[in-house]
Length: 316
Image: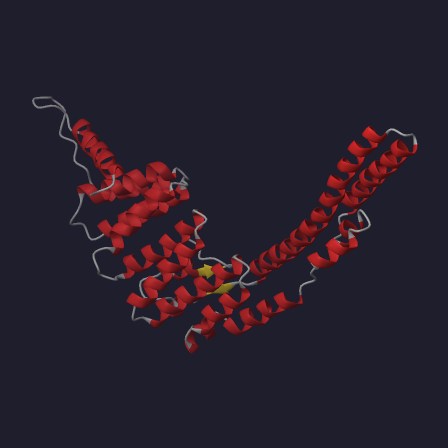
């Protein structure tokens, strides 16, 4: 059964059509929807960044001109506009409609790639990879498969899964490896194994002395705070017991034990955060340094070379 959003969307289109045509017997001429002007209006909205409205106009084009040769392209553009507007579910609905008829034309290929990007927008990389693998299974064109493997590899890089990226890039054809400069990518990715890392176990062991673990991880303010708080509580508990204030001393000792445990846990956590930051910086550096421009004669069939300037991600 179609999603309720389908009925709402086409209901709005029907309402627009009824209000666009003057009532019977009116003096005004009947408004004729021209496909060229409708397309130009949708494009204008898209270029102006009014993506939600652009999506509606592209869908209006597809609805009123079902036999037009650009109908499927209009649905694709509607999905792109929804994606830009942050309406991922609406975008997926349009992209899915383009791949369900079984014909893997250029529009369907782009729909698969855009579905992957939309799932990434939804923080669902596994589903994005699944869509690209579906495309690889269905397509018989090496450039399409290569492009999908390249994107899968980058998704793994973004997830800091270096081995997954290397495995994906190994499946790219020899021509694709040359086009996408895979050897350079793999060389750059190999530097990930040389990143400076902190060992969480060492950080925890050093925290036997409060603050030493944080100091090891380069968190100097946290180290000072841990030393002062834990040292202060230990001193206060000692003074309380020394003055026969056993109740207060016990409370301070329990509090001190809690802060001491937190100090160790915090040091281990700091080591993990340090390592995560190092990996993130590496990924961002890789994104900035890797630029691949596909020349027009090397672009996949039906795809504009302008759409394939790669700086770690496909530009749509």
